[in-house]
Image (cartoon, rainbow over all chains, first blue to last red; front, side, top):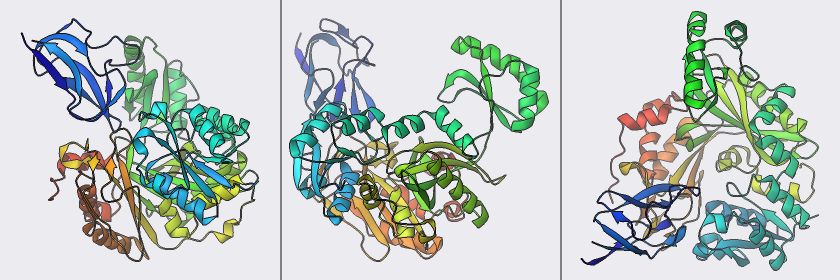
Length: 80
Length: 456
């Protein structure tokens, strides 16, 4: 088991939920499979899903919901 | 009361544009900025800068209280909302006025009434402006539908009352088809939306988007001719022209007069635009909605009339009566505007924020570029992708197109992807040259004319 960091592929605003009134895609402790959607990044009014490239368990989210982020900034840590 | 100091509650190219108009009238400017916009061009040009919140628009440019507090703190006595953001928010306009400041735009009540599409349609109809023929409300039963269809004419659309965004729509070409499909469409609407209610509306297959610019002082109103904005992608305008060359003089006169009538009927104050659908086949036009603000494409109107719309807005907001009579508004030549966006047309128009490493802009007679760019500027990822608008003018449409082609060839924005390549292709397209397009034309064209990656 090794700690891995998922980085933002794009700059913009990071969202952990598909919509404000819906539960987050993933919570701390959840298992993530390759291809799972972890969150969304809004870039110039366009929403792009952040898709898992590695499997593992969510240790913690480093970026908060609706946080303004830079490309390459850490979003979450997984153990996989 | 004249505005002494103006808060610009917007960003990007329109903030630059408003700053220029205010300065020309001797008005001091305060630029509201988010934390991500401290280095934007409008902030460099303004007399003062006030930060109103974090990068996210919901917490800055859409934050009413922060904007009003910024105006108060800086001693501004007027607020210009630009376009988008809070420009058509009646509650914001009301809050600005309640704070004792001048709102550069219509009265809050006008924004509220014209912002409600059904009410705006009723107001237009009452002012004698044609609206898209349709049933006023729900249709019950085949007999009623048949009677209505005779007035509306074919082809028409059956729309599910509970539908939206293009869902639950069927196009009907004859009375027999109508009788056959009404029960079916009602059943489908009930299954899909839990509501079998239907209404009818004229179907315009190749609608063109035309719109009329108006100016009002709260008592009188005039028009400044029309624009055509049919080249759209995902309902976003891409390329706009003035005048709408597809109209003959008689139709143009009726269209523009109808817009001025509607503006007068609402005692309109400020700059506004009435949007219409134009049916090229029948020569009819129908009012669809009114935008109670300055529009992105206002420069094409300025280029053919010589009137500075943003300066006029500021004068009207200060309480001046209209300085122009209808007979003072003359048009000359033809203007075309291309929206240059930070998007990559070779990759599905993917957004392309980042640093502009090199910038070469076209210059010369009849060429204008309204922009927020400067060399070294980092385009933030948080807002709309519009970088600037290239506007060209010529004595004829053909001359304007030639000038556009030259201007686009001289334009270079390095470091990010832009839609310049799309406009280069459109500028030499034979269908565009022949005015053979409508509001869904560009999306079809893009499917068969992929824009190649720009050489860089």
